[in-house]
Length: 198
Length: 198
Image 1 (cartoon, rainbow over the protein chains, first blue to last red):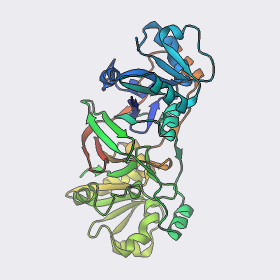
Image 2: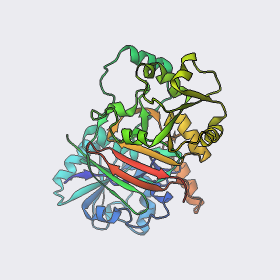
Image 3: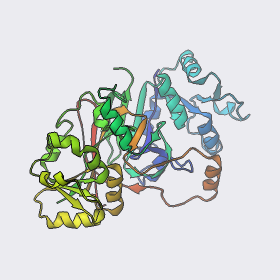
Image 4: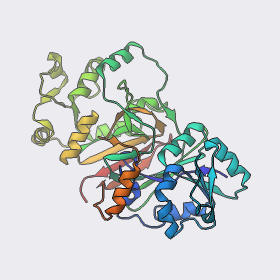
């Protein structure tokens, strides 16, 4: 069992508009199962999400449940709506680390899809609990919205540059990832899958 | 003559650290001419940059000029240092639109590389004056720094989501790009080249 994402993001890094509309929806070519979503879901036996994603989607999903027969784990410390259990939704109160335990004990034959939201994906990344970070870079610029990563944009500071020149040889400033595979879709979307470990 | 970029950016969208150190430098595999930089430069007869990039790099470059025999156009309304002209540096006071004219009149046989900075690339994009937006997505997360695009990160707002549900069918929220080509490097960096036009 691996925990994996398959999330669409605009080239400027947003997974959703400020309204919460997924970046996928900015693509005229997006539809049910497109961009590898159907085959990805086939490889997964469970869905994982944060409470924000659950609260945003639950009412909509009830009309046509997207994951019949697959348990849906929701990271939350609050109780779920009464009709959630019947749909296969399980509350997971132990945070990302507790959820990983819960998933392992569930004896899933295949993988778990970490759907969102951004903060939840960031928490799994931070913990090193994400086995595969899969993104589909969509050929679209959203300009504003909800970024996938926890980012702090800055502007160029001549003073900071001067200071860095004065102390060369500082440690490399980034966290390296390992690209496992990639593929292009006909509309110019590019799937990039990064795998844990060196 | 086409105006093109070939800029390295971390997967989280930064082209430089807060200090102004290029994202390229976060890659142990980066070196002179690596990641397609040498062949890209061979296809270009001129370099274009904003005043911020010029001021950041000029003193360093003087020691070992990176673009011998190629004019370097700097977008600026202020005068350049006296020793700039001898290195082939030309001030361009008419903004991106004026510079495009200037480049056309220069009768370049090949292309012009728009080097940076981020704000200058954004200005060319905004104007529709960038013929090719080429990026090399580096397998690294910088966390903070200078973003390539003019982005406004937001958080999810349940209120905004509720409002958007109440008025469905809004216009698509993004600007679509056209992927022309892509390639992977052995270290997991991926070059993506988007071309102007439908």
